[in-house]
Image (cartoon, rainbow over the protein chains, first blue to last red):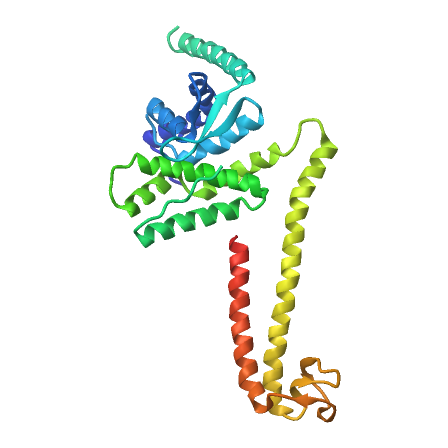
Length: 116
Length: 196
């Protein structure tokens, strides 16, 4: 059995962390204003500084929609293809605020453990 | 809402685009027509946006890169389909949800069943014509294309005295050619149906 290098383990951990935080990040981006799939992915890519398969965001958007945390509507553009714009709902904003406060709490805990 | 697929000057780019979307449509098979169209339109809109941001001139590089960045449909479409199916249900209403899911799946199941029966019947007719054309060599007087006293035409094994034969020995090459052609057409139609 091959042993993973530190770089491989770190990359794996980063992927898992990103995946776990994706709900929060998508809601946080949408909290700043409505956006469409491609733009949302570009923003996430810029913020996270990591390559992600763009398609992975769509099942998540669909799930958030089914949980009524976001809503979506098609808009016809003057030039270029039509866009499906996503908006955060009140329930989504509530959840985001709770997630952020939980995240701050976890961050504090980590900080206290690492730098007592 | 409708977003037209782009037209490419490069036939390979067109083929790549078509293949990608036929894969997506196959993976969306469990969805209703409207839900499937919504998924396809969103992916189409995404790829068009992605290609608009690409400054390169050649279609093939732009399509390839946009598709590569979006990823293999197998990786993301099934999860999407799953949540779309759950959108058809309502929390806390078990019987109505069961009925809705039954409606979605039963409609598709019935469509597949009827199509399979129809194709099966047509394949049997083709096989029958092929066998009859071959058996004509052994039973030249009893097998062929006949009309009976009522004037209804048919292909079969009969007592030749009571029926009028029309093709004679030509029944063999015509039967073989027609069954071959029908086999090719049926197979083409079947593959189109399953690709859809």
